[in-house]
Length: 338
Figure 1 (cartoon, helix red, strand yellow):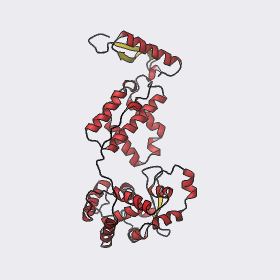
Figure 2: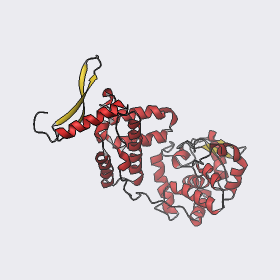
Figure 3: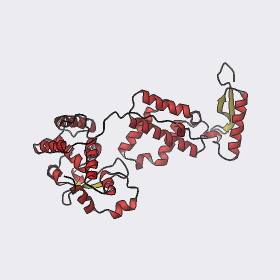
Figure 4: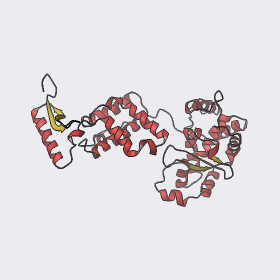
């Protein structure tokens, strides 16, 4: 190739444009003629055994892989809104790679993206989500022979410290929540509900009075994961008063409102901070309530499978999930909580 280039030798292969005319598509670039000829030989051999991309696929970008993968997994219909939002946010964070051709993205490019996220102080969760998308898109491209190898398998994911400390509330702090709730604090009551149901804050905020069957004393909700979607959670006596009152009032949310409107997740966090400060646990988040329930169920000796069903974790056995565990067994497990 003309001019002063670091890699002046290009490998091209014949293809056809949208009008059927024969054109040349660039396969790769090299520093020496020998490297270019070797690359061409490798491509010819891979093409002969049907392991090389078709010429028309040489220009497929990471963005093309993203759109194709979304169609494959039925992104818009099979994933919950929260999961789609997480994937989309992570995809946006990889913007600098979107336009690169899949065959141009190797170990160094993937690793560089991970390293830059680490240097920017991204959370462990954000980095892991980015790596998950990289693996999914690379495998999607590999399945279609767009790339010769899955280079993401060579990427080292750093151990990034969690931005938010995880933990569980103590029995004394739970008692303080109960006392505040009994005195009419709706925010404290909402956190007490989380401690006795295991719902995530986002799942809790999505509940409506229709989610509660007062006669059977069961809440139905959840949707972040397939295993947690529309799970049933028997109501513990410690929170029944608040759930019943909410049901009778037909208010859209079982927590304090902001300017008369139901709280969104961001606004709810501010209410959580106030209550957690009041019970002497300023570092706690609403998710601590979920950890609290998991911890208390374990301490009470509840069967692991039942705990997973209550919290919406995958049991690994769909038959067991729907056949072997009865509602009464779930209720018995809930009643083992103090």
